[in-house]
Length: 186
Image (tube, rainbow, N blue to C red; front, side, top):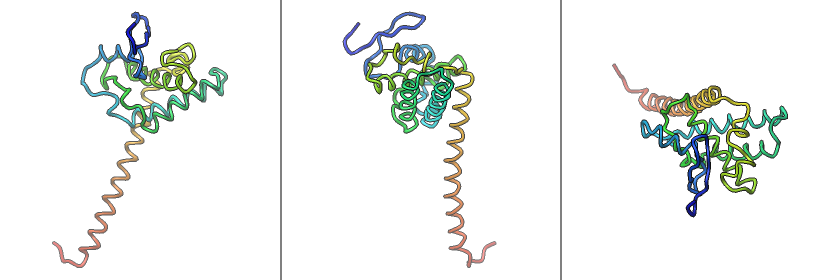
């Protein structure tokens, strides 16, 4: 293993992951295998923010059901809060269009949250025996549920932005109307 890397493994084998990144082996492979559009998840901060909300809610629900240790749920919530604040955007390297119903994107989120949470708990990135992307961050979830839920929340965030923009336009039109109300028009 080279210096400044960590060794991670999945069902396809082991890979060296640069120490500075927060994504893991599954995200690395997704970037290699599904580079379809060149448009990365990092270009969609509202989608990442929404995924943070989904993962935080799932962690607390799993904690409350006794499925997930409270310390782990808190670490997931801590990391999710970071994503919801717009941090770590550069760690989302999955292509927006990829095979598998959003699995690559979901795993990118899971790995980033796990590694932020691991550091928060005092562990090194990739020490998944302490906080695992699948077993803990993705606990009791299916990509087929988490992905569309995050998409809908992101859409809500975007619509909220559009409404604010429309209110600014509405106010500008009203002011112009007041400014020109004494001028005869066709």
